[in-house]
Image (cartoon, rainbow, N blue to C red; front, side):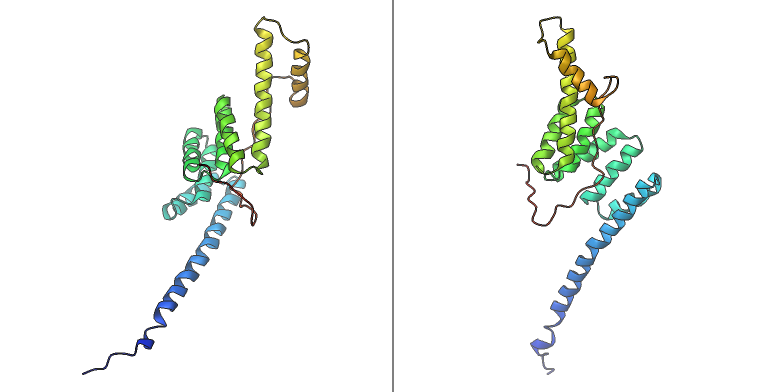
Amino acid sequence: MASLPHPRTRAPRLPALLLGLLLAAGNAAPARADELDALSALLARGSTQEAATRLDAFLARQPKDARARFLRARILVEQRREAEAIGVYRALTEDFPELPEPYNNLAVLEAARGRFDEARRLLEMATRAHPGYSTAWENLGDLLARLAWESYGQALQAGGPVSSSLKERRERLRAVYTETGATLPPLAPSPALRSPAKGEPRSRQP
């Protein structure tokens, strides 16, 4: 009768297989990052359609990748497909509530549509998700300044009594932001998902 192989003859196979899998997984993340960096560069150079085509192929392989989905929303904005971009950003806020950038960019699009209350809510969500995210704070300040401008205008048009300094305060806002007082600066979108620094806290929404 044939003898059974010694147990030790099989022992190296499993660790070797696991090692191979770990190495493959470790190499996959940098490869994905490099590919997305290249696609971001294409978009920055104005090659929107080529970036979109290549990104579609990437998302077919990695449909849940947050950075790729964020880039997809940016491309949709470049293509003037804002309603679709809003859908992508909104899905990102649901799947990755700890990321401030999707809230911020969604707020930019909502503000452009005149939905200032929703934009404010989203920017506040961004600052709660990452209190150190300065872009969201700056946008929130600009948005509040715009809301103040409109509120002061409504007060002047209402016909009731107003404080003696109201016109002066509204004029100061005009002087700070514009030459004509007709518009305030547009909110600034986040160009990409920012990788947090090592050890940096980033809270998750409840």
